[in-house]
Image (cartoon, rainbow, N blue to C red; front, side):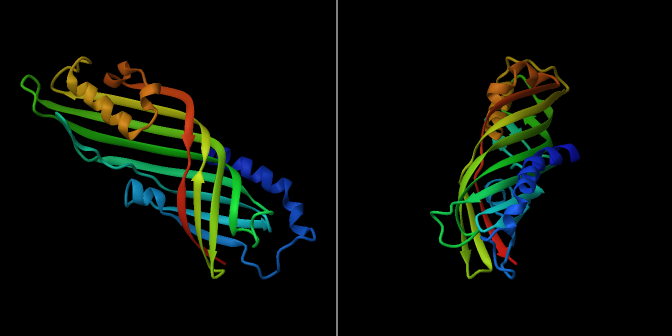
Length: 252
C-alpha cells in the first residue's frame, strides 16, 4: 500500500517543490488568507455505498495554484438476483482509494484568488477493492448448488481534470470536477469455485456471472479472458478512465 501511495503523490510533490518559490513573489496572498480546505467527497457515497467515506485536503500555494490529497474507504454495491442467479451480498469486502492532484486556477477568468473559480490540473489515483460473494443457482432443472466468487480489483490512473470551485462566505466551498479523462492500468484477479458440482463454461449461469461482473467493473469484458471465469486468474491491461466528483469543503 505504501508503494502505491508514493507513486500517486510523487508527481504532486515534485511539482509542488518546483513551484514553492512562487509563494514569495509580489503576487502573494495576505498573511491571514485561508489557504487550507478540508473536503468531503460525496460522489462515491451517493453512487455506490453509504459506507464510502472519502476526505480531501487542499492547500493553496499561490493565488492561482494549489495541490490536494484524497483518501478514504471504497466499496461497490451488491448485485442481488440476476436471472437464474441469486448473487447474495458479499460476506467479505474491503477497499480504499488514494489520489492527489495539482491545480492551476485560470488567472484571466477568475476574479478571486484560489481556490475560487475555474481550474485545470493533473492527477493520479489508485483504487483497491477485494470481495467474496456467495452465488446460488436457482430456476435450473438440472443444476442446484452454490458458487463462491473471490475477486480483487486494482485501478491506477494518471490524467488531467477540469473543474470549478465555489467559495461561499469565505469559509465554505463546493468543488466540482466535471471532466477528468485518464490513462488507467486495470488489474483483476478472479477465482470461482463450485460447491458440489463441476463448472461448465457453456452453462448459462456462467454467462450470467460474467455479465454481472462486466456491469460492476467497466472495462472488464475487454481485459479478462472468459476462460478465467472458471479458475483463478489475473489480468492486467491499460485502458481509458474518467474522474468526476462533487466535494463539500470547509476553509481555514
